[in-house]
Length: 80
Image (cartoon, rainbow, N blue to C red):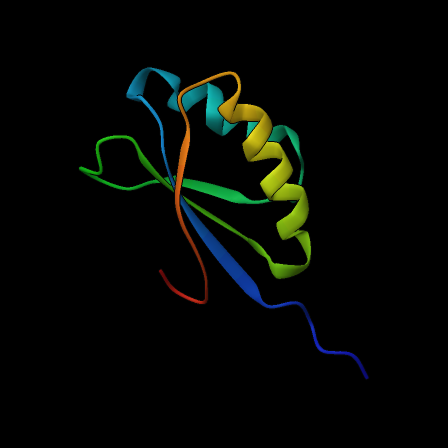
């Protein structure tokens, strides 16, 4: 019996003016991740995804970083 994929997180920072674009673009990739802005985070966004989709998430974030000033500040598993 196989194990379910683990959960991972990424913390990203983008200008506040680009947060809506970032969130809706990520939502267009159904099931890729859940994006949540961090209160008083100054453009900090927490992304949660399953570990088996990390490569896809990294590709999408790299593509978005060519469109908007997006910086991935960290990756991890479990809770950030």
